[in-house]
Length: 480
Image 1: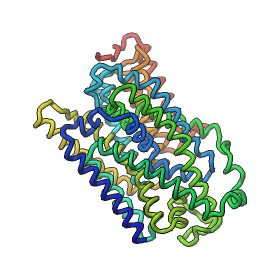
Image 2: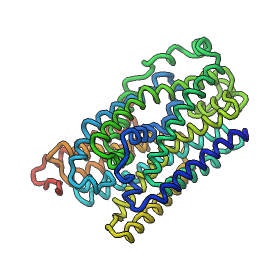
Image 3: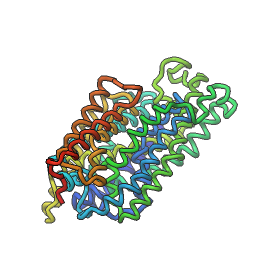
Image 4: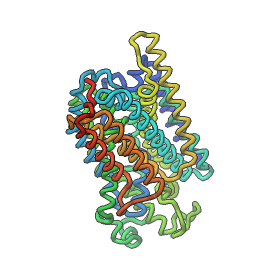
């Protein structure tokens, strides 16, 4: 156990050293938030998939594998569709905007089309959404650590995870985030492919044991309903059009061609690779649970257990010392790769679109803006850490954060690029309507016909947006 903790500690130190390295290189908030706009396709692509899948979806996919088997992989198929649609439909539109080299956030695009007030509202939605998303990643890391190390409580794990993620993100900015994402994703792949899966497969008794233990539904790709696919699709596909973490990487790319290539790379790595790795390990954890392997860590077969704990418990019980530390570092890497990006998105929107703090071109103002950006990252990171202490389910927290942003931002951003009658008042009203409908239905736990509240939020936002656009006396909202 001490050896595992030592490996994990070495990894944390290395991450901080990367942050410190880029801390010395960052000179402006442009360096901090869009990495100097000179990152290659592969670094961007791996960073995108590491951020989008990350620890939250890794833990969440493990939970789906535990409860529904291989069919849980369809969750990330929607990610592939979203990535490729954005590459074809969104990225060319973004690069056609005048002054793209000055853009650092998504709400700045809203300001270009709809004006300052709409941009501020978009900034609020983005900041709140990514605050919740950052919290969900902290929970994912905490579940991983507390489920793996016996004497590590959930609260202590939340604090450690939060401090590490916040610390190196403050130091290094987006460039540190992107380069560590690439490194972290490679660690995760190596850990899962060469340690996690083979050791778990052997520990549970191989294919015969899987067949004997689980129902046939767990081993098919049809163990889900059409409602599952719709709910995942309306939440995950649109996030590729409104996610600030993704726009920051579009702006950080060397050009349109490199950005599109990065999105195609990210889609392929999301599904099938990451999707099946996650659910297969979750499925293995279900087998181990039903075989009674988890009894040694306090979870007897067929007693109540959080499905999202299955994967960490599997690693804890089947991996030998040393390898457990490596695989833990791999999953912790995945968590960090999403947490840091979400915190950067939250901070970037808050400082640029809400506080309206911008570089003025002078060295003194550049330094002032950089310090303000780091202070915002610290403050919002602490708030996310506090929120994480009161949340429990990783996947639910992530999907709600996604839904809140999608229902508020998706219709206006698509309308801005593809509908000439898009109006300022229509965008503002649609954002308020979509966000409120989704939030209220979610809090009241209302799912008409079993469909996700986000679907109704998007529909209501679309109706409002089109209605205002069709009113002839409403002035067109384009400001260019």
